[in-house]
Amino acid sequence: LVYNPSTNDRYVFRRGEKATKSGVELRVKQAPNLRGEKVYVSSRMPTSAVQSAELSARVKQAGAEQISTHSLAFGVLLVAEGAAAAAISGVKEPYELASVKPMVEAAGGIVVDLNGHEIMRCDGTINGLIVAANQRILEEMLELGKAALAPDKRLEIIRRHMPQVATIQAIKSGYVNDVYIVDEQHVFRFPKN
Image (cartoon, rainbow, N blue to C red; front, side, top):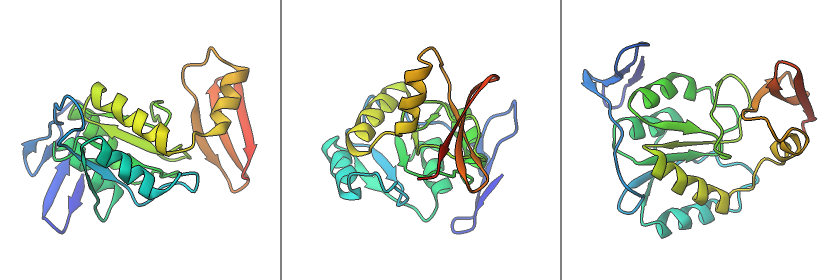
């Protein structure tokens, strides 16, 4: 359950049921591309971002309108309800995402990190996020994000050592290291800086 006190809307999802907004089923937009669509751009972009202005320019170049909200969760819900075609954020600790990710997915949307990897958990460290209404929009957002944001170099290091790995799960480990779980036998630890 997510409640928006500004609009008095209740977003509800139960496993095995449809996600709803104030009783109406949530469905993502089936736009063929970003042209003429709205894109939520979070104010939380990583320090590795080229410039927030660069990302804004790329959204505009794609023919989309940049929008923002007071909350990452509500920005993501705009995709779930079809009010936006995509959302992008450089957030590293996505606690707000935990309540809305299942709603987006139930509405037909896709949630990945800035590298295009599925976000398995919302209680650790991630490399930003992209929420997209469909696969075509996701591909366009990944290209837009790659052009404007620097990739997580730690993922490149892991992939160089273990190229066969499909999923790398990042988690936060105390205050000392960023930890990446690759599989049941491999864990990579990186110093904070």
